[in-house]
Length: 207
Image (tube, rainbow, N blue to C red; front, side, top):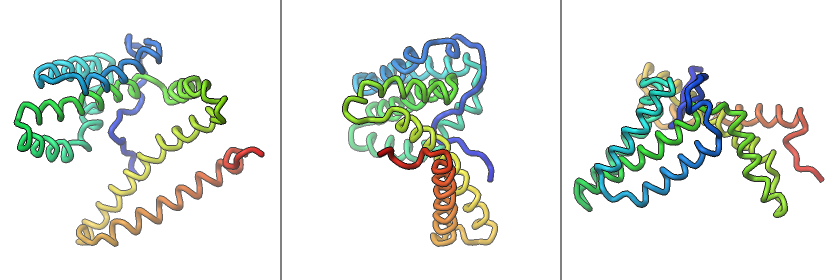
């Protein structure tokens, strides 16, 4: 099965200032961009923020192809959202909404492209520590996120492979030819993951 990214860029080793920046700073950049998407009302400002973020992404050495790969899955959805919002609220508003979504995606991709997965998970554990008093398990929470980060690209890759196979057989419009193989493969992957966790004593809640 070929590898596939899913919305966010994979980690790219490097020594740029973004790679060396504290995780908290990059996290607040993502949160700040998310909040800004609710505040910015001028599509020109949104475009300027997006241009700055894209420049930072390229400066980090992640590459234009990786940036495009992170954004490309959203293009059909963004086209629909932009056309609908432009029809309902006007072209400037539709453009602003689309640009603000891209701002959030590129900001999150900056985080994942310049931060190793293990460092991200360690940050999640630290962030979840205060919730231990309410019964939360930070390690298990981070493990769940780690599994999700592995599983989504795997399932996306499985779907692409099945779609290509169905197209080669002239069955690209047959839902069963697309859904059933992906479902079976995903269940098998989930079982294998569960067995691997159980073998390490990580799949069951402690008494």
